[in-house]
Image 1 (tube, rainbow, N blue to C red):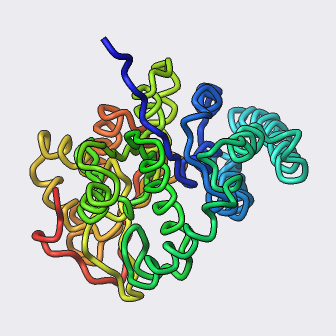
Image 2: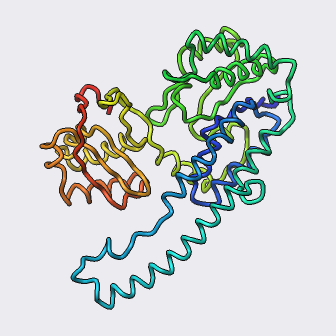
Image 3: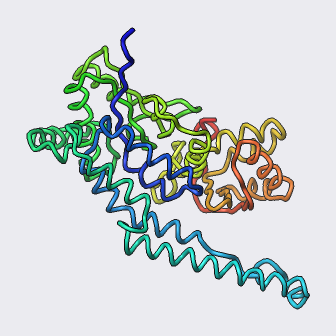
Length: 361
């Protein structure tokens, strides 16, 4: 029986940058697995440029969340002089000292990435791997790929964002096609970017045009698939990914906010919800249909550092949902789907609410 051929693997920039958001060491070891499949990796210098251009921004965003609340924000003034408050203050000083130590390590990551940044070192090793699948080392194909990418970008073909002025995605896609044609292999793309397709109910669907183009230009016998999870894709390449590594990655995926409905605010920006929002609403609906109904009118939901802020444009709906019972319900249902929510806040915003028909869950 012939040995199964592994697909070629393309890893988008957003996947590399998300490793700055993992909380445990298992997440970083997942990144290191790429070294074991380096000869199957499709690389472009476009990915490297985007990584280096956005790395400092992502690190600084993570750094902003590394902070400790003051005792004054937790304890009312009339209790501030108690022994318990004094003990808490001492504990907070110790925690604050450790937080400052961590912040200093962040400074080292920014100043000396080649020494102190494990994500940077692992990514650079991938980008510098000299193979025929790395466009940086293919001067014989570079001009051809750039010309095809320019034409693609000018015609507005996917993958690209509506307001995109760069042809970076076009370069990546044209090189993916070229590598598939040259090697005769299947393709696995790891991305959390909706430009490549749709991620819905735990399943991934390649953009219809990209799927058709792949068949026309590569082969109807070859396959191409997109995955939001690097762990899932690595298993397709027979890499032994641990459950802990996959769990760490899933925590990052659940915390990333992505646009999931058609509503827009007055500044014409897509309203955002965390990816776990549909699953959370489904769980809440099984306990309280009324709470589920009110939450349908939320025009945005923001999840950061275990805090969930839910925004409403309708003041009456906001006042109906804003109570301790619903806060506890949301926190408990969050735990049931594996999302830790420490605080729930409801706020009133000036924007146009979505109709029920616009809410896809």
